[in-house]
Structures are given as C-alpha cells and as structure tokens.
Image (tube, rainbow over all chains, first blue to last red; front, side, top):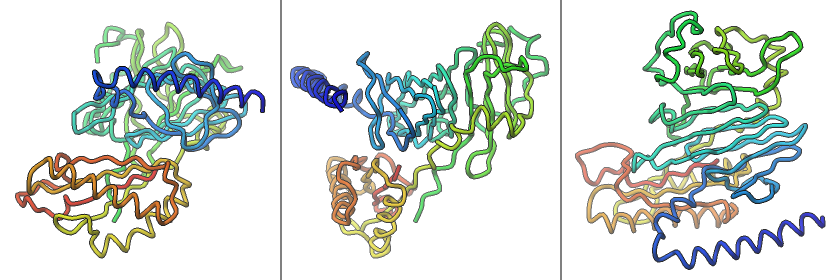
Length: 174
Length: 201
C-alpha cells in the first residue's frame, strides 16, 4: 500500500513535469509530439506481476487497458504472464520471467509509416502478426540475444538451401 | 458486418533460456498456424547462418556463435514446457465492426444502427479497455469538410456506445476524411466509404 501511494505521488510529479514541458514546446512541435505520443498498444491481460519501465523511470505495475509506448521495457515476474494488443492488431504475450523491449513501433499506414521492432531479451513470448507484417513484412523484426527473426510474406516463400551452417555468407544479406 | 481484414500471417514463439538438461539449446523459435489455420513463414538468422520455418509445429534452435539449427518438430512436451504460459496468455485477435451512414450526415443506416447492440456486447465480452473509432467519408466534396464530417461521425458513434454503458476512457477517436477508402470506386458518393470502423481490442 505504502509503495503504491509512493508510486502515484511520484507519478503525479513526473506527469506535472511532462505537462509543463509539453506546454512549453507545444507551439513548436505539436505535430511531432502528437505522433511520438501515439501508443504502440495496450495491455489486455496479466497474471501475477507485470511491470513497465518507461524513460528510465523505476518499473511501475501494469494493468489492463494501460497504453504502452515505443521504448517501453516490459517485464513479468516468476509465475506471471502478460498479454498485449498492438495498434496494428498484432497480439503479443510474455510468459514468466520475461523481458520485452518495444524498440520501435510505428503504425500510420495512410503515411506509409510502418515499423514493429520488438526485442525479447529474456524468457518466452508468443506473437500473432498483424497489419504491419501483412502490409510490409520487412518492417517487422523480432530480436533475441542469439538471432533475429524476420517475417516472410506468404508470396515470398523461398526454400533456404540445406546446411545453413555452410552458408555463412548469406547471413545479414537479406 | 465484420470486416475480413484482421487475418494474420504467423504465430511465432520464442524462448530465451540456457541449455536444457539434455544439452539442446532452449533458445527456440517455433512456428504455429495462425488462428485462421494459415501457416506463415519466418526467417531466423544470425551472423553464422539462417533458417526459414515454413511448416507448422517446426522449430529452430539458436545459440551464441552457431547458426540456427535445422528445423525440427518440437515435441508437445517441450512445447508446453517452453511456451505453455505464454501461449495461454496470448490475447484473442481484436474484432472490427464497420458502421455505415446516410449521405452527408451523421445518421447511421438502419442496418448499422441495428448492429450497435452487438458492438456493445462484443466490447463487454472482451472486457475491452481499448476501443478505436475511426471516421471516414466518401470522396464527394471538399476534404476539409470531409475530415470534419468523418470526425463528427466517429464522435457520434462514440457517444452512442458510451450512452450504452461502455467506459469512456476506453475510446480513441480519429478521423481520416476520404484518405482511406474501404473500396476504390468511380462513384465519389460511394456508400461503402461513408463509414466508421470500430476496433475492439
């Protein structure tokens, strides 16, 4: 309880500071600010403990309906999970002890601005791709510590030759 | 009417863990069919190589300084062990409804009006706290006017849904004017483009 109160007090201060900055910079960059502020998605569900670290601030608990943004670092505790619905209607979940970084997320199809770059730094994740992967498969990437996952449109089915370990020259060339 | 545009390409699962007891890497990428049964395709690559997964239920393992492994079928047991909780936490896909309007106004067509209770029921079922309402107009007329008209259409729908008891804070209302037509038509008054799209997440 005390912790919660502390969180909300701190939250209020940060919010006040942000509002002040927004007011000062509004005449110069209102359009940019509006775009930077668009959510990348929202929390649909969670079990146990799920948190977000935003702008380097201390992690705060997540609740259903909370919007999430580019650069957010989402974590789940032991025996916990988190379900997200992104703006392009892709869905993402995290299993226990996981960490997901929303490296980049842009969904403005009318401007051709599409990007979904997610980093699964730890734990497990399930994803069903959405509009970004459909409109522009190359605009979606998932990074892990040991590999990068790219999406191929169903029209671009290519068989990679057997024995990829003998073909290191192709790495990164996509 | 539900728009058929929410289909997806792939379901992918991955874990980032240390080696398992039997020495196999537990950095696993697994491809599953999407909720409609389609199977997409993913490319897993690093500096050492690359593998493409195209078959449902197949997986590749990755490790530092090693190429992704040949695709293999993942046992149900390992699938559950690695991905069970994440799979169960995966939200269902959002649902989209499209409501149509009579020409040059914010009056819903009879059919679309009759659809409102279904929109409300779906939002309640999903306990949605994230509902996007996007207004559109047909090409007829000045674009400034169309943006204003589609904004008023979206706002009208939001008000109706809030009146029916959906939480006001769940809504995000935007207006696209005529820039995002549902159908490309020679008719500037194309009725299918006079619409509001509701995405219930």
